[in-house]
Image (tube, rainbow, N blue to C red; front, side, top):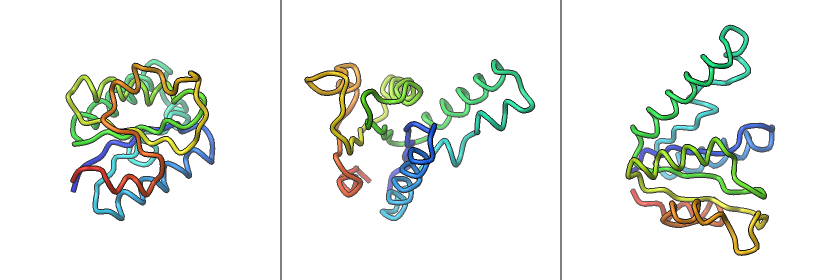
Length: 138
């Protein structure tokens, strides 16, 4: 099975819970998942002992290293626009030659035609439910 970097927003209890549910589901399929909120750093905790600049650099470096280590990249696309940090991670994964996939369980979009073309152009496929993630390559 694949090692997956899972990127999504992490700013509300609902977002954090959805990310955990999705990662747990992928792990139940046999994949290994790097979930930044679980395996990375929490910004609010780091800011208690480090400057904003130090925290930003540490988080970026940790996430970039883990994008490189994983086989696949999955980004949550829910909301009017996807999370900007997740979009940067998508760009890094795509530029590194990683197969990138989207997960969009809602219908809200900024563009009437769908997602921003720069996002769609980076993705091999967009899955519309957790269950569709079963089609990810091994």
